[in-house]
Amino acid sequence: MTARSLISVADLTPEELRGLFALTARVKSEPERYRTRLSGKSLAMIFQKSSTRTRVSFEVGMVQLGGQGLFLSSRDLQLGRGETISDTAKVLSRYVDGIMARTFAHQTIVDLAKYATIPVINGLTDDLHPCQALADFFTLKEVFGDLMGRKLAYVGDGNNVAHSLMITAPMVGMDIAVVTPPGYEPDSAYVEMARARAVEAGTRLELSNDPAAAVSGASAVYTDVWASMGQEEEAEERLKAFGGLMVDAELMSQALPEAVFLHCLPCHRGEEVSAEVADGPQSRIFDEAENRLHAQKALLLWLMAGESL
Ligand code: CP
Ligand code: NVA
Image (tube, rainbow, N blue to C red; front, side, top):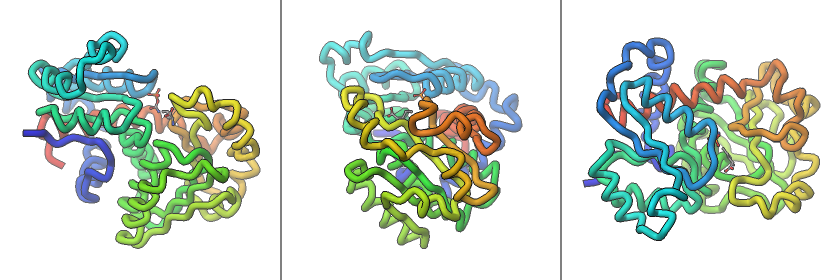
């Protein structure tokens, strides 16, 4: 039997998402209450790509809950020498209590979840970054309280982070405007999914090439790198295509006066964001990074310790 996993935020009902945010707040304010809840439990952490935040926050999160995280680079696993995903999932299911994986192809994580008998958590794929979206919207809730009717402007590449934000925004009642250069729009399958969810929730999804219109009325402005992991060879071409789409003080001034700046990190100051904005008073990037830890601890408690939401 397959266990409950988190491959996309779309796997959650809006009620479960609300419950996860509430648990995240409890975990953040009273960490000692959960100190032994994952005692004796292990999380296998498979990485096909680099990571600072995801690796450290999951590993430290497991320790803070009384368990342990095992860092497994796909280069060192037999996976890197051709062992199948299904065999890897089945074998790990006999040793550990959960798997977190960062993969290139999205299908890899889907297959891990299909063949594992334990929870599988998506730690980023080429398509999605759900743990990032959990921390991002939790951060916005900390700043603004209820998010209903507010607007998030995403300025940059229509990538994994953009997809997860688009899918999640309607679940918290937020409008989302996504601005990309022509040709770098989000994947149409995720646009369709996000549009259907927005229609159902009564929120707006706008796609455009117009940053000023997108940030107008926005409570949060978000950006991400122009070349994601796996796109290193396109970096130069992307630099040209995205030139001028930097989130700078001038663009921030066109959002609401109380607007905050978010970035999943790592960021490139002077490319997608100016140093003035990244390190300025509206920036919440380090709170956002910290909240990865608290949000993922809540997720681990729900999936691996049966904590109710
Ligand atoms: N935001 C994020 O996932 O960072 P890492 O790539 O460092 O894990
Ligand atoms: N879009 C970026 C996010 C990194 C956390 C990437 O996939 O490289």
